[in-house]
Length: 282
Image (cartoon, rainbow, N blue to C red; front, side):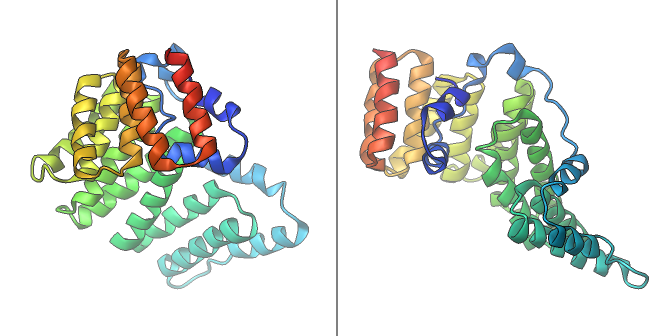
């Protein structure tokens, strides 16, 4: 079942998010149609913001206009940070649109040059892009998060969590819309972490996902089994392991691990979706 088919088959956003969280919706690269592997369409955030403005109320337009024109002479950098932060909060709290929110949040973080703020914005985008189904938006979000993680790493070059985040952006973002070289960029970042600490399960987990996405199923299985051995309740690892076995053609192992994921999630809707997957394997 493809990513888009999975979304269509499930009623309710909460369940879609649940399944994305459990790592069961990223098709392996070798299973993707040629169109998915082609160059991603561009996404113009400023044009997107202009379009979103058309949906605002009159009061919101007035408020937004004041925020957009709030920079005057003086400490411009400081004012830009404040303005971008306020614009981010407007799009988050008043308009409730994610892309403008993280755009302005990212701009403020870049100006502020704070590792904490750069990391917060990067992680926020990384968490969101997993569920993104529009290739253009996915490519844009991944690029934004990559830039933020890279700037944070410049400030803290020995932070392995940042390197795992950066690698994840390539695997979960760029690797889904670009060629296999994008996935390999992420894998190389993650390998630099596990070479220092083979027990870094975040890195091992993402290496498993990277192997799955790139069609290196045996490597993916090895990594994911290592994670599950250390973290038996890691549902994401279990679900990816099941998907990897299914993609490899090992139906017995796929069914075994799908059933394990059902037990761990313990949700009837999730179980129903997994049962449908199992039916397609038999």
